[in-house]
Length: 287
Image (cartoon, rainbow, N blue to C red):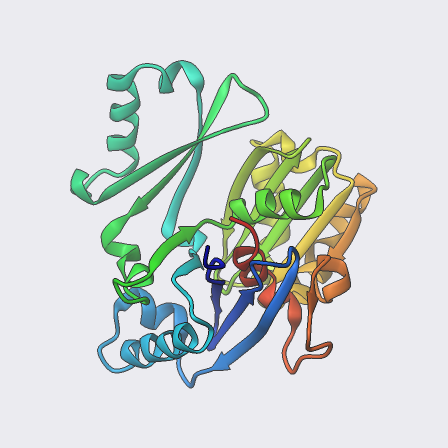
């Protein structure tokens, strides 16, 4: 039986594409971790399907596929382009009521373009709902040719993949840093407890936004043994929000080394901030 082909994990921050390729025959081992720099705003070009720049991104991914023999790609989605919310399970259990709530949340969007996905939470009385607008995020799926299987992965799923990879089963939080938002997810005993994202125009507004959201979402101020921070300018987000995390007695961990990630790769040093590649690495690993 032929060995499985490697998987490619992708994420995009500012003008950089970060990628990781696994070695499917070796758990926790990567064949490659890398980045590609562009001279334009990558998320914007992808979301717009920019006629001038989008083909160049596609070509880059096609070269990676060909070089490493990829047939399965996982791409980190942009949280600010999604809808995340929590519902009582009694709503989920009633199809008509469930559909009414989706229509309210996505008012003005053709139902054929609405893609809802429900997730279990640690509190079984509730369900977590992810809604995507296919039109808005269509560019991410078009990045790879039809010959590949391409999965869009939301940022709150990075924590689930981290738990499976690291076997961390206590209470922890992940903070994914994007150019226009931070994605905050809480896990307990390997299960999602809650997730939200805080959109901002200026990162300096985050303390106010954190306090405002924590008033409504008690898990944000719950006990966390670790807070894992990654993505674009993670160091700056830590500087801004660390005072709000210190009271939780959590270890604040910037995912900036292979050792912290619990992975192996041939390269030991990199010409970019490794914490920005962390989502791509998690997406390359596992099933």
